[in-house]
Image (cartoon, rainbow, N blue to C red):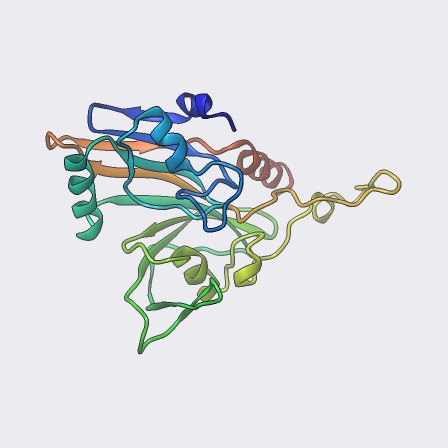
Length: 239
């Protein structure tokens, strides 16, 4: 992705903040041993040299990502995240039929050196997520996820605990998803291998709600990227 394209990702901007619709497969911050490719922070600094990331999204996760334009704005948003005053909404496509209505998962999370997390009631840090079902399909569900804390892989492992792992989430037992699962007469061309309907964890940061520097409430929503939109469209067509 070209740095100049960052303008096409802007969802909201004022004198203090700008919020981007982060594409999947792009890290929020520079990764260790990164030789090529751009992080969102690097591209944000091309757009505004003093930009600082207000929070992080996993590399595979798409959606709303906030950047502060100056130190005072960064402190302002950092305090809101710390005091759990930022409203965060994610959408996830999960395996199975689930009817969640205000299901609150409160299970502490411990990061491991292997890059995954586990539930640990003794050493883990507190983590809370609220879940609601938005839609159900033949063998999958679209889930609204509202994390009150910001632990690593929080939504992913909490959904695993509900026996509703996210589609294509290999780390936490998520199922693969193929068009052939829905279409009985589906046939591949000769000598070709079927590819999954989405090539990443099916998780999207849908919206962010926070208070601006002047005390005004700001809510920003991110449209689905092409891969997530195409996945949901196929699920809707093949109920």
